[in-house]
Length: 136
Image 1 (cartoon, rainbow, N blue to C red):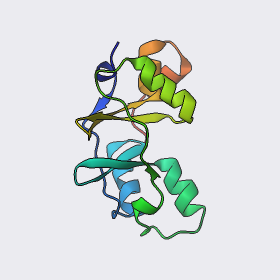
Image 2 (tube, rainbow, N blue to C red; image 1 turned 45 degrees about the horizontal axis):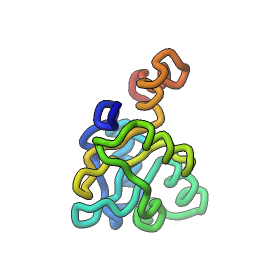
Image 3 (tube, rainbow, N blue to C red; image 1 turned 180 degrees about the vertical axis):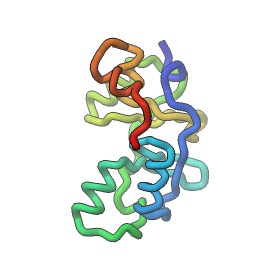
């Protein structure tokens, strides 16, 4: 099975100059836990809800802190045509829950641990949680 068959397509993105508060609001609106950070159309990083909490709020930073200061730079990525096993290996090796999907260097999707759980073991607790309704 290929990444394209399970990934979330068309992720919302932000720029390194957008601020933490904006990213948090986007995550709430889009019901997502990560946003690719893009500069001139190219992926330069990824910011997660955990990054905002641990690298910004817990450090006493202002909600106006630029995303570029807290995002993970140059994350490992996959392409839509790679096998699911490649995303699983990255998640295991890098201890991450989401991997950006790039097509020609531009974000086209995100594959998450939940996406993989739904595909690999639809009866698992993680798959059940991942298929639930949006957080409110």
